[in-house]
Image (cartoon, rainbow, N blue to C red; front, side):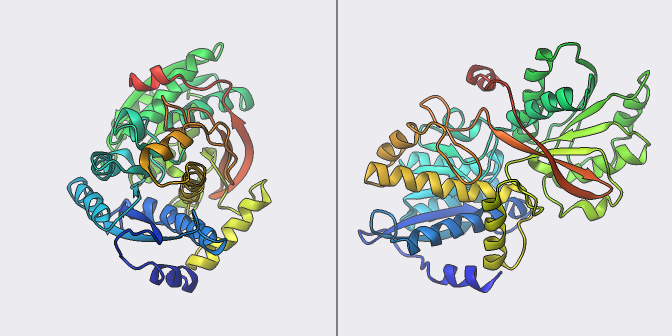
Amino acid sequence: MGAALGALMLAAPMAMADDDKIIVGFATAQSGFMQAYDKPAEDAAKIRIDEINKAGGLLGKQIEFVAADTKTDRAEGAKAGLEVIDKGADLVVVSCDYDFGAPAALAAEAAGKVSFFLCAESIKAGIQGVGPHSFSASVLAAVQGATMAEWAYTKKNARTFYRLLDTWTEYNKGICDGFDWELPKLKDAKLVGEDTFKNDDASIAAQITRIKSLPQEPDAIMLCTMMPGGVSAVKQIRAAGIKSMILNGSGMSGSYWLSATPELSNFFVPDQGSVHGDDPNPKVNEFNAKYKAATGGDPSSQYVYPGYVMIDVWAKAVERAGSTDADAVVAELEKMKDEPTLFGPRTFTADLHHQNKGRYLITEVDNGKAKVVDEWTISEPIPVDYLASK
């Protein structure tokens, strides 16, 4: 970790809340595979905290933070949530994924605290799965699936699609749920087959055989998966000689895994911002430089960015409420409509503490190199009742 962020961490003693400080509690994965998602977003959150503190603080107070390791374990997650609450957390920050973040978020809900998932993208990461004080800083996985379907249809003339779902997490299911909602809206688009697998499957040979048995390759494969198993699935699809465009959600954002597929091409993901230095918004590229200065490394994927957004919108709500009282903060968050942030607008309502529509950059991997090639916003929001029924 870079010296700047290290110094910031040292400046955040694990102390009980009092009238002179506001405390953010990170009940996140400091070990286990979820660390790869949680830590970058947490680092970005701490950068925003540092900016706020240097500008005079929040409600005239300095923000400090405490932490507890969930160890990428649901049972440990509940303990971690209780631990940061015991340390005085006014805001409880939980893991990027609903399945792994929910135990800590439920502990916060029981204690009457606001919780924010760092970047969870299931509608359950909020009112529907945790309760009225819970939010997510990212955009729903369903929006990713819908975005990729509509974009591929409109910009790549894709008409035949194959749906391949990794059933491991709610996030993966959400990508395919959005795809399922969008595809019937696309005139003459056709689902030519569908299949499932599990993230830790060593082989998806049977699924690949079924794709290859089609009269002709589909124009696009909607691959609803995430790390770590997503890399294996992509490698096997390409090793089998299937050249179809592969669409995925943001769970395979970033370039950190591309060394495992050095010749990968015709692969596309949606990103809230680019970690590749080519974001059309120069302020995002400036943030990337700031992140590198603070941590010693470049952002690894788009999941860095929701951590920054989370602190930004929460702090705005606290300022407008004039208090860290949970109900008052929730009321202000629910008033936000197209609230500007560095990584796109955010809207929260009394029915949805998530984003059911959002602008995405489209990143293409060509010959093992990732670059932004387009941007897309789905034509209409995905209805809350549809999302809640999944």
